[in-house]
Length: 261
Image (tube, rainbow, N blue to C red; front, side):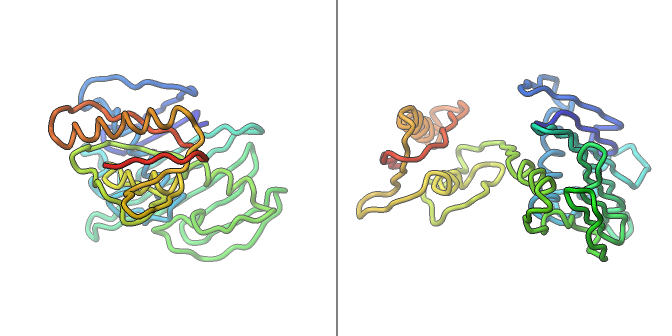
C-alpha cells in the first residue's frame, strides 16, 4: 500500500507531503489539489511501470511545473509498504525551458536500507535482492529503466514494486465519450474510459457467437446484477437522461452472461 507521497514543484504543490491510510476520501475546494494528487501518482506509474518518456504529456511536461517556481527541477518521493518491508522511490526531473525538454537527473529505489536500483543521470546501477551489485551501464535519461527490467529470481523485490505501480488506476469517466462497440481487448484503459468495454473484455475473457455482441465469462453472482445496472446507466447517459456516475463492475471469471449495448 502507498503510505507516503512527497511532491515539489508540480502544479500547486511545493514541498507537499501526504501520508495516506489504506482507505482515503479526498475532499476540498476547487483548485486545492485533489486531482493533482492522482495526476502525480498516474505520472509516476506511467514513467516507472509503462516506460513513458518524462517529457510526454502523460508524464511531466513543462506545464506541470508550479507556475510561481523558478526552480527547474521537480522532485518526487513515493513510499510503499509491502508485507515484509518498506519501499522508497525517489525521482528528480530537470526541465530545459529553451529546448522544451526535460531529463531524469536522479532516480532511486530502495527496500528498507537496501538499494535495488539507481540512476545517477547518466548510468544505471542495478542491485540484486541479496544486496550484491549488478551491472552498470549508460541509459536514456528521459526514461526509467525500471520499466524494461525482465523479472528474474534475483530481482523479485524490484519487479514487485513495478507490478504494484501498474495496478494504480486513475479515472475521470466521461459516459458520453464511451464507445459502445469493442474492436479488441485492451489491458489498460484511457483515463476517460472511452474503451471501457475493451478493458472489461481483457479482464473477463470473451466469447463471441453469431448475433451476440459481447459474452462475458464470470462466476461472481453479483456481477450479473452489476453488469445490467451498468448497462442501464450507460444507456441513460448516452441518451442524456442522467449524469450519474456509472457503477463499477466487479472483476470475475466463470459463469457466462451476455451483455448487449
